[in-house]
Amino acid sequence: MPSSNDTSVMIDVAMAIMFILSGSLILYCLWKKILKKGKGKNVTTTDFNSENDIFLDKKTQEELIETKSCSVLLTGKVGTGKSSTGNTILGREVFKTSSSTDISPCIVEKESVMYGNIEMTVVDGPSVDPAVSNDSKKLQELFQRFDESLQLVPNGFDAILFVLRYGSKFTAEDVNTFEILKGALGNDVLKKNGILVLTLGDNFLLDHLNENYVVEWCCKQEGRFRDFFEECNRRVVLFNNKSNEDEMWGCHKLQSLVLELSTNITKCSY
Image (tube, rainbow, N blue to C red):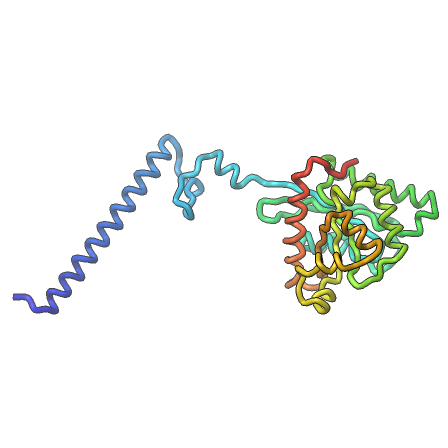
């Protein structure tokens, strides 16, 4: 007669066998399901969504991997960190940066970056010297640079990024810069396509500790800065172009705003 220990072992073995048989049955049924739905096709690992255990047809696969595209144009007053912001968005040093206030010759450049299945085209447009408004020849040359920028993206820009420096006083020069930009790109460009980009995000965090506070901070400002912020429908992004650790939150926020604008019919085009 078997002892109690032997009986316990036999029960454990029996349960293990039942578990293995049950697992085999489940795998067999699942494989039959795949073969049935994949009849007439070459079933590969790309045809099977392991997360949801659902067989994906070709149309669904194409929808899942479809690449979306969007485009942004960088501009702003000279010395605000425009080109550095472009390099942060791209994740690599592409656009030439300079601490000099001399904006000639102005080189317009275009590059692209992939965020998952989203291809973002970035054009480093011309910097604006507010003094050009008093020189008709230089103003005409500046407008030509903007025309060149617009021609680089024939389908039009989803967003125009107006770069400002956080902590710098918003002066009459800045107001004049915005008026020049509106003259070059259209009076309604802020409302339809404008996003304010504040550089020196590291200084903002020292003052306020939270990058998400930037919208509230802008709402508390007064004067023409507040007017332009409202004209952009309160679209604003904070960028820290010096830190690899902090740069991504600015890129993620920008990506969200640009995709939102990309659904609009109206684009900024030549």
